[in-house]
View 1 (cartoon, each protein chain N blue to C red):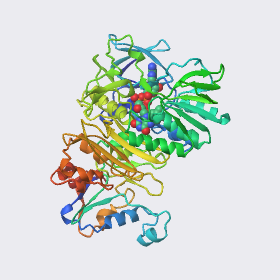
View 2 (view 1 turned 180 degrees about the horizontal axis):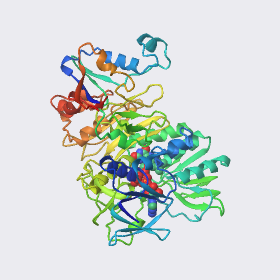
View 3 (view 1 turned 60 degrees about the horizontal axis):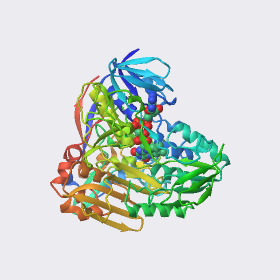
View 4 (view 1 turned 120 degrees about the vertical axis):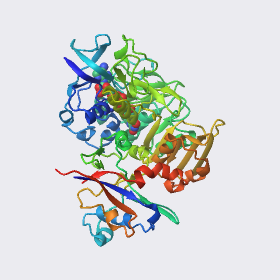
Length: 151
Length: 429
Ligand SMILES: Cc1cc2nc3c(=O)[nH]c(=O)nc-3n(C[C@H](O)[C@H](O)[C@H](O)COP(=O)(O)OP(=O)(O)OC[C@H]3O[C@@H](n4cnc5c(N)ncnc54)[C@H](O)[C@@H]3O)c2cc1C
């Protein structure tokens, strides 16, 4: 098992928003960019966001905090940290009270325009690799392998 | 019976404590005692349940196998009636007692019922704080058309919204000259009142119930100004007071709530308290006060848990914070509730349609804020407050609808983001 970090590199971020585009694809049903944007209803939405005040830009998503404030604040038990340390959101339990939005120090929880429920990065759980990192054309998002443990 | 850790209360505070203990230690013996018979549930969800937004199962705060997984014993539906701090024992209603090495009191709040002439135990008078309350209200509304809600605070208004949506004719009686008066400013109160009026709810201000009429059932309430309201139900939602009965005959110091230090210790060794029953240090208010909020209860319980295990931790960042919504009008606020004409604080605000952003600054630091309308990223303001960042160099930007870290000048921005954002987060694969 390896621990990975996702890091953002503002100095090389071009502000192309492709991380948002591919985050959308990663959270679509088909994982196909054309289907995700043209046909799937409701359209998936990105959980990463690009902060920009041109020429400065950088991407920001949930930091999966060691002690997540969103989890402490969630009145519904919908936010939780799983065994891998990923902070996840169980939409079926969520009542859209926005306590997590109030609590997140990074402002990294977005709102689903369709359901009005919070939307957050799940580090592409279930997929091979975080799409935002994989598709960033200029390596402004990077995965760094921190430690490896061999079982 | 003897346990290393005994927790009285099976809600936000109690669960926060149990989870902290088990994060560090699987072996110690833990007992959770709760007067309510239910598996850990969230009382903050009762309006959503009544509304039909979630089913009964989703009221549970943690999965069904929670206690098993946490390896804790429970006594649910068992009331604790006293504490012998000398013998380190919790006394139960059944006459039994449980010995503890460390104890957490997380007994929460209880409803405050103001005196009203004629109020006896009428069957159609309800509070709105717990599972049994909402189940009773759910039953009662089946054959009710009109309801009077006493109290225009968050809980009273949440109940009113749901009852109005269910087709009842709702009247809210509030003593102050506006709803939510202690929580938000006047602009926000008026907007909320308007939302209710648009949805057919009458808000009666500067008034209270002097008398209730009816023996078995309340049939009518008489207000202080003589106005009479016929009704099929009365919901009393005036407020919650700390439930501190259990420490009555102990030396544990109580002010309004059980007084705790930043380690969540009470005045008696090995006894901790948190949540709605306690009074903790509010870093913005600058003194201890009761902060009856879910996040504070959970975090307080968590900090208590670490300290109970011997791992020193302090709760230094508690303050008032609310995320609320009425008829889809969302409001988030935190810190002090400052009027816009304050002389003590510098108040900046922007109002545009339904969107409202207001900040009260003191020496350049955010002492309180209200965000309504566009909610994304509101947590950044709480962070700026917690870190006591001097926002004066970029204060105008705070009012931008899409305020973000990019609006915080360097180097502060990267000081706030460096560790987590530039250096990354951890996921195991
Ligand atoms: C309708 C409603 C909506 C709310 N919405 C929000 C919201 O959106 N955001 C927010 O921050 N807060 C909200 N709150 C407040 C929040 O629910 C409380 O702050 C929180 O529940 C406090 O947790 P606690 O653990 O201190 O105590 P409580 O939740 O009050 O639980 C007390 C526990 O102690 C047990 N207990 C009490 N006395 C005894 C005894 N003598 N012996 C044994 N057990 C005992 C009870 O059975 C219970 O398990 C809301 C509250 C209500 C009622």
